[in-house]
Amino acid sequence: MALLGILFLIVGLLVSVGLHELGHLIPAKRFGAKVSHYFIGFGPTLWSTYKNGTEYGIKAIPLGGFVRISGMLSPGRASRRTVGSDGKPTMAEEARQQSAAELEEGEESQAFWRLSVPKRIVVMFSGPFVNLLLAALCMAVVMCGIGSGVASNQLSAVQACVTTSSECTDSDPVSPASAAGLQAGDEIVSWGGVAVSDWADIQREIADGGTESAPVVVVRDGEELTLTVQPVETERPQYDSDGNAVTDDDGNAVTASVPYVGISPAYALERQSITSVPGSVWSLATGTAAVVARLPMELWSTGVDLVTGADRSTSGVIGIVGVADVAGSITSVQSDQYTLVARIGDLLMLIGSLNMSLFIFNLIPLLPLDGGHILGALYEGVRRQFAKLRGRPDPGPVDMARALPLSYAVAVFFVLMTVFLVVADIVSPVI
Image 1 (cartoon, helix red, strand yellow):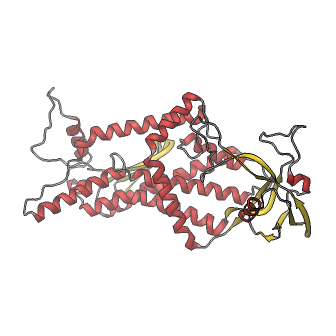
Image 2 (tube, one colour):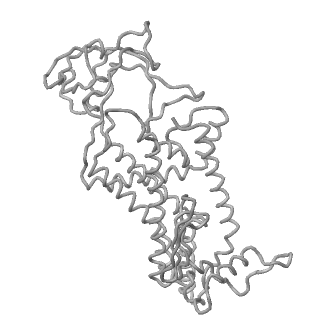
Image 3 (cartoon, helix red, strand yellow):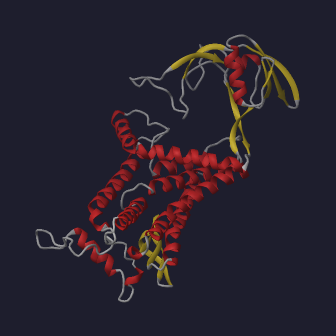
């Protein structure tokens, strides 16, 4: 069953990447730029066809895709340095020559760098924008069509004893819920004389009531029953808003004395209004951007966890192996409460989250990412406007080839990061 989730993930990613690249291809061709290749996958070509000057195809390794727009780099200024101290062309000059070689004689006007600044921004932004639309679409389908999982006032499980371990022993006292006769499947409609309609209501009444006995009205098999529950005070782990266990400076779990009953909620799918989707998309976008902003720190923390053997944070970064493990878990976990519809919803939300990550990540203003090209175009536009306002000649296109050393360094960093996260996901998977 885990294979089904992983297969769903692979197909979802290929579709997402394919549509991302179409987001670049369509406006580029519409604006007159030459697009020589559009491929899904990498490595040896399995199939391809030519249409309107573009080769479309599928490659053997399904780990992404690419679109090749000819003439990405301008020739730069005539006064530029083209030869190094060894008498050979510089790295930037070789890149300029390769970019120019992508255009046949008579195609010079189809070079990407010749497009106006607004058109170049549209071409480079359209790819990530497609991922944003896909993320919003997945969230809309789940939230408005399938429904989001919400903790309900129905019980999914009743703990037999009061313990911090996974199994009860003879020395563990009976849990208040078990002693009162609560059962899985009971629907709690009143706690301590106060009507409750969801899990948050129940939690609030338990916390407010302390260890005082409380009458609890449940519906079981269509009949109302009144039971008496007396919570006990016990030390329980504390969790933050992301669901992670709170630890002190020494890494020990932080606990607090709280009223304890021993019940767990069942989750029900609840559809929401379409008006709630934009807010959820915004929350996902800002949350993803926050993770990307602290990426170096997250990678460092992951490295420390690997060295020390500590458990990785569930809110930290994971690689493609970790994402595949999540997808596999969605389809393989055994639970009567976890319906097929709910699993499909979670898989769609996973694809939506990945598309949001692609949107945010590609907008990082560094080459070779889309955001780097957008920044270069913006800089060129601003520079031209300043020159125009000051009555000076047009400074011409920005020589993006000069940024290639940084571009290669960024590419190497991303490759190393990918390998590192794959190793981390295998050696110390997120629990």
